[in-house]
Image (cartoon, rainbow, N blue to C red):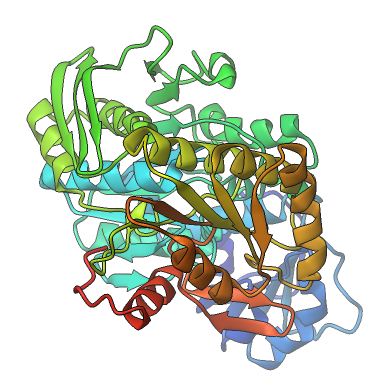
Length: 498
């Protein structure tokens, strides 16, 4: 493809050097630059892509896009596209769409944003779409799936170039839908620029990612971008949690709005709700008629996620029977209230809860399902992230649990004991009964050792993750597998079902 064919709609300043070169590849990672490639020298949070221009050219790149002026040292044989300040990410998204032939235009996109519930909601919508007979892609925190296969997720929402490639894989295989988590980072960094959404879902908004967004209002503003249209027009349908105070600011932005809730008047509401460790049963009242819900997912929080998914199904024109079928077909979501069963006389649950609100929801779910049970919660806080939420997490876990094992999550380059001390402030505010065990595996073992018949042990924070990020590097660590190993060492031997 000629360079000029990649640049329509891209906001550029001067384009110097050979303007009619044939581009063979596009990348934003100099290590992936190849002969005939176009390299985007992006300015990131930690790295400046401008420092890798020589590396990209050395690997064969013949064109560079950057917000910087053309360096004098640059070979005359290399084209230089000077991007307008602040337009780098948007320009990459536009070039990526041009490179792959605008695959999003051939698909119905469903985007889910919010602090909590995104992953479960995307899994539910994906199951509904596939139950209706459609080929679909699924993109989010737990991984990326297209007809070409599945792979681990680097980011909740991948960079625009990778995203457009996945869209193309779905389109080229005859697929019609993609369901994805739209993270606040991705929205703020314009990875979704130019993508029109058939359905946009808002789950809720609680404190998270303020290390990046700085203020709660900026965090919400990033979420709102999905409903403002990401440069491609407002979504056809918005599905909004009416119980969240921020929902009113999203109403009316899309062509059609469906609200859902448990406590506020809404378009989609549950009745005859029955909760148990075996799952959920209720009837959803909707503008398209009643949907009889039977789901293996547990807890009141999943009623919200299911209602949101029903709203998406209605927005996509899927029948009530196929919506119900899709919900029933989803057995579990990796690392979301996932039970670990080795035949022990107490419940062990792994969950991704890593904010104070998510911890409250997790523990409240356990408390509601096992009102007579003693709840033991293991959790930690992430390093090099919003420090202010740590005592709030301590308060949430300490006030609702019978006993807390405070440990490490992903400390990254930060001192684990410093992180733990920040959390302890919140635990002490509520006079919690707790124990500190910085080594996560030892904390899991201590919690299981502490458990008595009928107790509920909650292993919170890492969920589906199969690694732990330490100052010394990333190691293999999966709460689910570690819990199974510990239980087996204690003499339990039932084949795991979680």
